[in-house]
Image 1 (tube, rainbow, N blue to C red):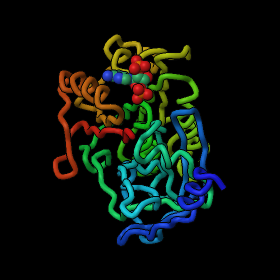
Image 2: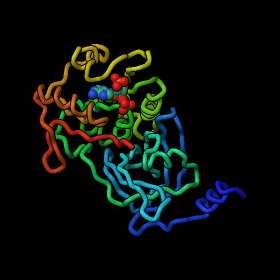
Image 3: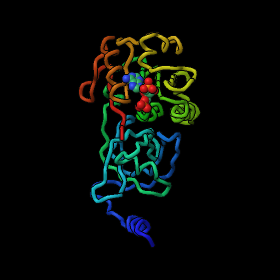
Image 4: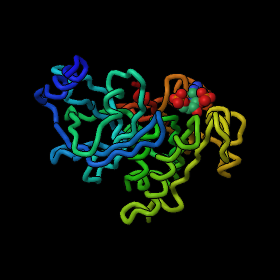
Length: 274
Ligand code: A2P
């Protein structure tokens, strides 16, 4: 046996105990969309409760002190499993390993969910706009599948901007499945509206959502009235640069940022990055 084979054998044989105070859950499904994005599902601990839109810290039991990162729960609160939508970053401390998980593997998870992209952080309104880029769609995958969202808002308009067409598959499928779902489909039909766009590959809607809002092309394509702080509430999730740009647009329109303890007209959260 050469040195490399020996090293591989010893790494494989090495197991690490599950740290105290975390759940150890089993991977039930993995779906890769591109070389940058994938989705996976894990079993849900019986005692785990969360509000749709919140995130949890997850990791792998691959070291004595595992790297844990914030992941929005992409499944709704009623789902018996937990779903996550992840980026794959070459050399990323967690995603380099996480992207290789298979059904039956263990994922660890801290028990306390948190986050600002929750219905409670917004005052009542007529339309809810959810603006996302990349994996920032994850919290909205949860919220659009939660019947409560439709009790609070008459219309839910969710946007997803990615570089390429294949990166939109997760949001496309989730919206489609939501509309066909026996539980939430009935309340979502006619009330859930989806606007996908790409920036580096030709699709029906091209361009950053920020630019499409500014030019009015977004409103025109959706045949809706422009953003109005009197009637509309906004949630934003994506990269730092995207959040900064959306903020300046909605601040200028008179929206005010809210929090769990101070609900207002918009909330933002950074999508997980590596
Ligand atoms: P672009 O291709 O013009 O950079 P990423 O995969 O890098 O996280 O990007 C996801 C999507 O977010 C891409 O379509 C990207 O467009 C878009 N994006 C990046 N920065 C911004 C920004 N500041 N405002 C709006 N969209 C952005």
